[in-house]
Image (cartoon, rainbow over all chains, first blue to last red):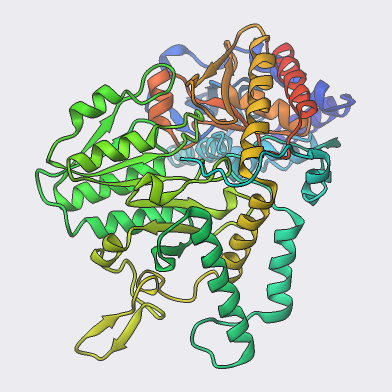
Length: 140
Length: 413
């Protein structure tokens, strides 16, 4: 699936929720159930320090696709990470570089991606793109 | 410490709440419950009116103009300084320096002290400090070669005074402590801290940002050398605050910033500085803010600090009991003497998650390390949820907080 298609799927899924509680419960459950990163990658080098919550990101290249794993110490942040990983992981560097994240507004989670929120998510997206740029350079 | 003038009154909270238009707001569809008062307090209509009046009727630059508006603005600004002087019981009006806030006041003193300190001298700060209270002293020590030493705290979040005694010596030149801790609410025994520092000839700067919304410090009774605070913590606007300094200290300290207002005479060879307080008030000040600061002080005095302290203590006791009933909830900062601030965590849940769910329910709390990372390191936690209460809060609002925390716990575990 392309990034765009995955984003549309997510927007569809979220449209079924009737209120914020259902939306947040879904994200919390995502955060609880998914193993997002191998413990060995939760290193200092992979940490993105937000004022509020910490985020770890690891990337590797597999068959010209970038595979991301990530984690957070806060569960709602982790739920959002799960959504972002679903969108960005296993895609080509070029598609990752060109992708936008406006779908986050459509699913009612805009406030979590505010640069002033300091939960590490904005820096995380930047970091995903940086990895993609680095891998794109390698491919060229 | 507290100046008790007014007869004991009880608060008419219902009436008081009508003074604060923001309390009618809805957040995420729910009536706002504002429990982030330790970060900034809300502004009553009486203070908002003063701000509107200033810009509508007499906005002008002060001190130098000969025209009517300038004179009116100057009179009101200086009247605010009088109000603030009376409130803190400073001996002289010129001991009140209007600043941009607490951080500005601290930096002004730290910068001035760098010319007095030398290698081997020591500056003591408490373990309960806000970042803004640590960094300027680290910078000062780097510049001057002095050593920064820390007065440790115990598990309850109280300073260990026996350790303070051991740290004090003739090397100690300055002691820096907050009156009340922003992260834990501990009220520090500043009278004793000041007396002991003076015994070894050290000066004391007290950060009163968290204290001034709750009590009325008497700087002469405390015999404090410097006292700083911000208006926005006590119903005033942001961007304005006060530095009180004893006259002899303010005369000794060099000016902090150069500019207009702070000079007496300027030639290219030499400048002579203006008298106090203008020596420390370079440039056009926050005129409207200063005037509104005075109005905020008046507003709070009209309500009465004794009544405020009594009512807020009731809220603290009520909230503490209710929150401790929640299984797995731990309160950080359990000092015997504390103000209406509760820092807490739920077992196994990140404070950010709790704060996010509470916000969805219209409840504003602060989460994170509260700019006091060393305290969080002490307890080995990433941060806390902090609910801080003001005199316009109610027990019904605390019930909503308790319900919200329970809901967050259900959702997150």
